[in-house]
Length: 282
Image (tube, rainbow, N blue to C red; front, side):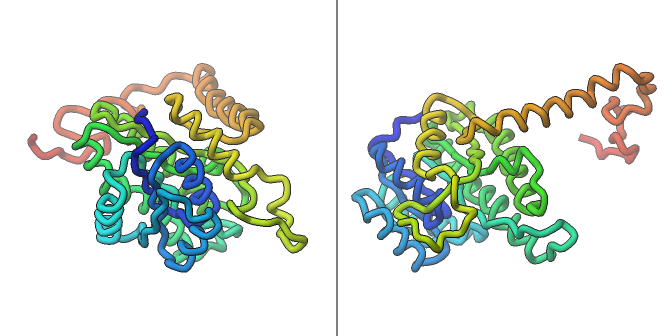
């Protein structure tokens, strides 16, 4: 992992709860931070809530637009230096509706922002890191990417995609001096700078302070961890899920083995794919 002090970071979704927490903790570590968001008004409010600390800059960015990524990255690097830490954090809240009630538009919005937006950030900034042979990419997923949550199908699907994307990316860029981590937080509470009132929604009660959660996760990242968690109580349900998966493999020992020609992972005859269609010559 790179040294953070004196380096530059770009945090997408920087006007949101986790984005502001990331910015605060990274600045505590001595980084110069660009918080990026699609809304100029939200960025201004975020800067105010953070206290407009030295080393913080604001950057407009539409994470679903490759051209916007290029403009934002060029502008940020001009102002604060080469991006050493990319925090791919932008996302939208789940629809809180059954899968069959989701509109196609809602589904696409979730994946465009929460998954494709992360891919586009990687596509723009990872080559710059590879050229310098240093840098780190932190992708924000969720416990919802590991555990199914009723009425959150769009959100869980996007976050599961972020986890798998991060796992693949890690194997592809490690040899080039670039690190990757994936953040899987549990329930995070009030925004940075928020003063609780009697009108706060009940869902905010009992949730972890976002800055505390990010400090825990960032320390794990600096210690070389790939999966970054915030809530230790999530270990038990994740273990139960893993046990169910492994039990399905164990049951294979109780059934007759497939004929190799029937096995979906069997080697295909030369010149054909697993589906039987003819391959083109190499």
